[in-house]
Image (cartoon, rainbow, N blue to C red):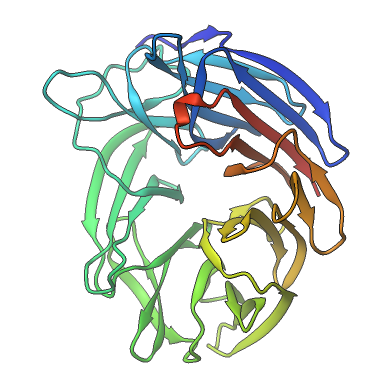
Length: 362
């Protein structure tokens, strides 16, 4: 296959904010942000870049911790889904043009010289969760615990995609999921509390236990293990809390901060090393991110009432070029380093012209 060509679709500006380097990418006609992911210690962004007549191309943009960027154009494909292989190599599932069918292929983003065009298959609509030693793992959950979750494992061999395995997880459904060095872990509400399960790449349950009989709703898994202390992110009584669960099943609540605004959404925490995780959220008044390490809250940034983001723990404000930004993703860039990707809120994505990437180190 042909590698994507280098293009120059953006005017690029670098700014030292005092909190890290801000890269501003401005397209001539319009840009619509899609996904981003960590790739070789840099952020790999996907976007649609529009021209004056409204047509667009899929563009990959790599932004390093120093703010420097390079962009590439995909030859034939839309609806990108980025993921990492077991060796942390960057892959993408895209839908090439076909007049009658919408089928996707999964290919490396770069280094395609020795790759043959794969057979297209039915798209999987779930989210990339992480990679095990042998497979990239995707997960799709319905809001009902009565409907089985779906699991996709893209198996690798000799550094290449070998096969895709689709499976349904045993009930209950609507699981939280975490993929790490100690396997694939699930957490779902159960009539006796929360059901913690470990499964393999085909969704077979390897072991399970009931934890946390208290009526606390888990927002996200920060870490989950049978052998070590587990940490769950939650809100309760106007506070952000972490629930700790020991290997013996004992639990405790650690209050992190007063925060009366209820989270509407939280997204999969990003591990930036040393047990530190960055979790983005939104609520009625804006969006932001919080950084935790075990039962400690290190940062809590919120856009409420700011043209930028205020750390509610210190009062420091990251000034941004404009208000009403959408925080679309967080990527690890190194040990204790991460990048945040933003774009302006708009009713029509094609009318946006700007992407912003803030590289930050704790």
